[in-house]
Structure formats: structure tokens, C-alpha cells
Length: 176
Image (cartoon, rainbow, N blue to C red; front, side, top):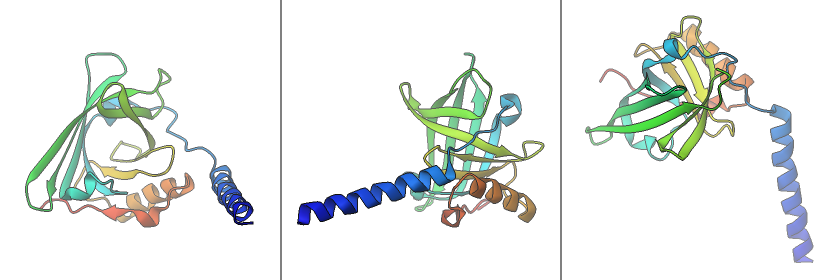
């Protein structure tokens, strides 16, 4: 009797996950990413912090630079930790395919790369929303240390439309 109950509960749980995924559909990256405009320095305004990023207390900055190799780029992420020391990590990245859309792969070295998609950008690439296809990670980035209320609302609206729980966003202190 217990085995059947567990199977039913597992089936109900799996069904709920599949239904939630089907209801939201797939995460959509921007159809065309102008990487020359996207490259450069971005301040992290808010994110779903990962275990590594929870050590960051303030001043998170992400720098994207185009590599000499086609469809490749380098990433440096830095921040001030909770114990007031500087922390930085170097990453490599590449476009997921040659379509030019916002689907990126980033990681410490090839072949360890994770999927990060640029979900939205401001009209002049003054802000961006980056997330993963499983909706577990999300970043709101800005070219400045702050983001206006209107731009933040637009960024959150795009993330929410893609099925991200924007209530989980944690703001990053900048300029300290």
C-alpha cells in the first residue's frame, strides 16, 4: 500500500512540474544580439544569487570582451565580498550557435559551459536581462550603477513574461 501511495505522489509531483513547464513554455532569447554593443562593463543591479555569488556583498561588475576567435568572448566578474575583500573570476564564453541570437554559453573553461540567454536589452543596450533556460538564474544588468524605476519595471516585466519569479530577485549594492 505504501509503495502505491509513493508512486502516486511522485506521479502527481512530476505532473505538476511538467504542467508548470508546459504552461510557461520555453525561455526565449533576443532574436538578434549585437555583441559589439553588448560587450563592455555591466553593473549587476539584481539577481537570483548562486552559492558563489552569495559571497558578494556589493559592487558586482561583469565585463564582456570579444575574443579574437569568431563567436567567442571572455568574461570577468568581480565584486566586493562580505568580508570587504575583492573577488574576481575569469570565464570564457561563446555564442550557442551562429544565428546571432542571445543564446550564450559561459563557464570556467571549455567544455564546462552553462547556458545563459540574453532575454532583453534596452533600446540602446543601457540595460539587459540575462537568465538560464531552466529559470534558476536571472540577472538584471545596467551600464550605470543604478537603474531607473521605469527601466527596472521593463526588465522585471520581461523576466516575468518569460516565467521567472521576479520576487526572488535580490538587489546588489553598488558604489560602496
